[in-house]
Image 1 (cartoon, one colour):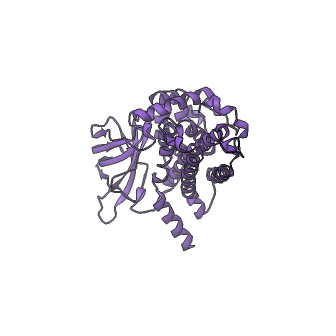
Image 2 (cartoon, rainbow, N blue to C red):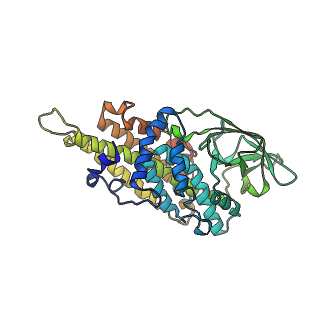
Image 3 (cartoon, helix red, strand yellow):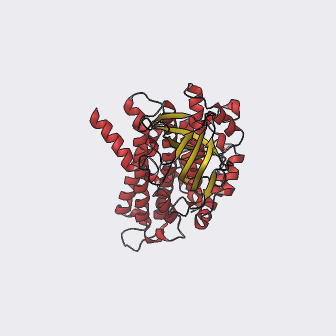
Length: 398
């Protein structure tokens, strides 16, 4: 289903859809989105990086979107950037997901500098100069996320660290210049700390292993990054905290940007799937004597209605967590939103397949790819189990 095909019924589609919600990107035209969309299937089939899309994102200034105007950025707020990511995710999920792993560094560093939380001016300057940042938090055998690390950071006399270990799912592998990681410093065995720092790609101790061949979001090129005594310079260590869930303010800001932006991408996937189901049901005829179209069947109407309700709730929840709020529980709301939106997205895509029927599992149908892409939502750290444990423990302790 192309953009042109979809527009003919845009007025019939819910307001949570880019086909009807009146959204206008600060960076991309309808023709841009159509190009991104037209490439997505090929990237997926070839398991290739979204190189052409990426070049256009850079040219449009999208990678500096949240940076302040003094550095040449567009100054987008978290709310505005989440809306952009929802729409990019609608047309090109893997493209949106991968660039997300750069954007949350840019956004959180902007807020950190504005609020005086940490000295991240160097990070903003590097992004303004065209540097691309990747995220290195996934590790084999690490089931506690930022609370601990398998990768080790050994402090040096000059204040730098030597980093050794493996990070997995490091999106943007073909293009990143620096990678933000967390690693464990055991120099004081009785008081180990988690170090949040950055490593340059051209450091001799950095090696890429091309391991990415996954179920979905294949164009992200999320290969492994291996460190063998790589240097993380002193000024690039942006936060430290004890092992465990005791985060400094900067990490709170990081999560406050990462979680809604991530959720926005998966919302976009679900909205696209539901729109395809709606458009397909309107076009598909029926042999039943009492209905003319698939859309006239009560069972189909029931599934579409439930999906619309779910996405309305997800959209409202997601929008709400992009606005700063005070209180201990409010600090956890982005976690709750991430779980709710990604789980809802998966449910909606599953329903869309039921509406469309067996043709949706053909590799020729866009829904087949969206079905695979949406599966990874709940697996992004913190995964479902981790989120529910944190929220449940907090709620029961009140």
